[in-house]
Image (tube, rainbow, N blue to C red):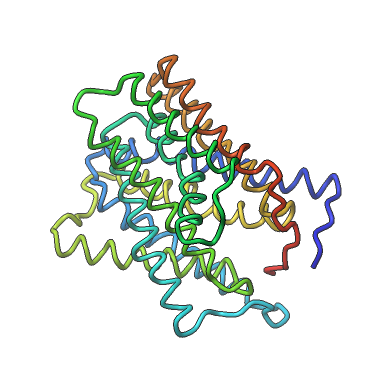
Length: 309
């Protein structure tokens, strides 16, 4: 159906998207506190996706009760394998890179480096010949590279090269993830998709942990607590709020509002841990985030959404 924006609907949608961005932005705090409790990255991520997957399947079951027949289909065959692969490979690898980076560098730097992914998505689309290179994409890619150079030129902690590389790899992996996800059918229920993706990530991380021996139960109650907070308030609820916000205001507006996430990450880590950016890094962060505005100039994405209820 065609999306009609009223003031209450717009306010609700923007609020939901801001809540989503705040939740994702707080993931750095939850992760660093989990690490401080002695829980490793592998264990934290496995539990995160197990908890999130269970919550999503519960939500899917609740939405299916007392509702009219679903207007969106449950994936089957190749589409189902496609969805599982997105979680087992794409989301799992992106999370491993990003949260691995958080264990090595500041949360603010990791968040800003992650947000190199929008111009990378454009670059991948051009490489796959889905889109043509134009002046707008060229400027965005140039700004992204320049912003990263400023972020790194502003100085990072000693021995943090691996963390920087992991954060950049997280951005690249997420760009590929989004590109692959773009090929999914439009009638796919996004809540079901989220449940499948989280399940795929949970299974692959669990298997990897069993093989490598990196999967151990948290030794302290704090480890369980912070991991649960990460799963609920920085995974499940932000995704639900984002999907609901998209229904209210459309994908384009939701994407723009969601760019409050790195601001929340920078502000929260500064408040809690006293992390700060140098002047060069602050400028670099602004340049990186400016690529979003550049890529959306004259970009008339579809503002029609279908109900997922």
